[in-house]
Length: 254
Image (cartoon, rainbow, N blue to C red; front, top):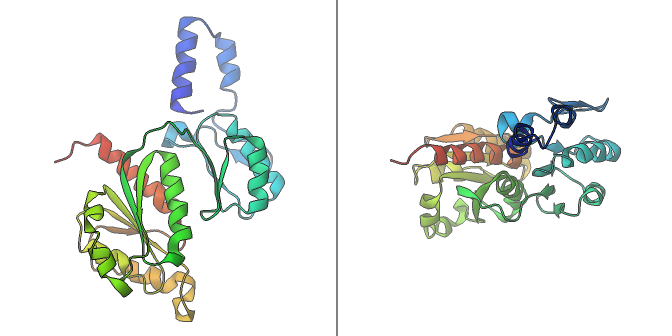
C-alpha cells in the first residue's frame, strides 16, 4: 500500500464507489502480513516513501518467492537485492515487469514513465567497484532519483576525475565507491560543497582486509561533509542519497 493507492481508495470511499467494508478488506494487511517465517511490512511505503525491500541472501527460494508475491500485490515499485540468477528467474515468473540487473544483483519493478528528481552522481575509483555502484544506481533510480555515473576515475589517474569536475558540481548529492586505499571520497570532498555518501568496497589485495582498510580511510577522511556506509553497501548508500536528494526538492535552493 503506497500513498497514491491509499489516497485513491479513500476518494472512492468518499464518493461512494467503494463501500467501507470493501476498503477495510483492502487494508486488512496493514500494517504487516504474517507469513510465519516473515512479517511483510505493507505499511513501510506510507512511513518511509518506499516499500519493503527483499534481501535475498540467507533466504530460501521458497521464502523469497512468497515474500515477493505479497509485495508485488501492492502494485508499487519493487526491489529485491543480492539476487542470484536462479532466484531472479523465480521472481520474474511472478511479474512480467520484473527486470534482473545482473551486475547489480537486483530484481526491480518500476514505472518506466516515472520522471526522476534531482540528481545523484555515482563515482567509482575503479572498474572493480562497479557492481556495488550499480546496486546503488538501480536502487536510487527505482526510488525516484535521477542518476548519472562516472566510473573508473580513481586517484591512480587523478586527471580522469579532474577533467570531469563539472558533473560533480552538477550533482545534488554524490555516492563515491572505492576499494583499495579508499581515498577517493576525501579527494572529491575537497573539490565540491555537496553531501557525499562514501561506500568502501571489498576490492583489493590482502592488506585491504576485505574492505576494512577502505572503510577506516573513509571514516578518517579529512574532507568535511562525508558520511560512510558499510562495506559493499550500495543499497544503503542509495537510500541515504535518495532521501537527501528528495529533501532538496522540498527546500528552496539558496
